[in-house]
Amino acid sequence: MKEVEEETIYETFIFTGIRRGEMLALKWSDIDFEKAKIRISRSLARTVKRGLF
Image: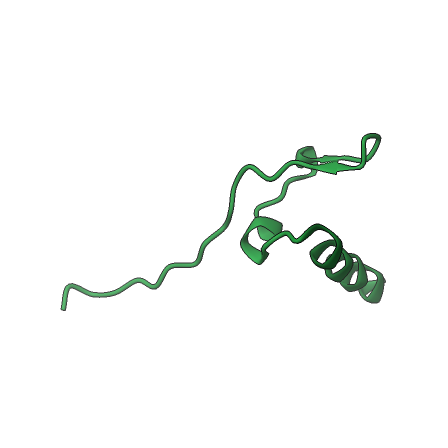
């Protein structure tokens, strides 16, 4: 099953041009299977927490 999930992720990247942060921020409500559309409305970004100095 994990192979199918990974293949789906890679194919989504390849065929849509979606960025990694956009893919990670997707929710099920962003996907319309009937119209075959994905709505990109947010992106996830990783930040580095730094001290004061």
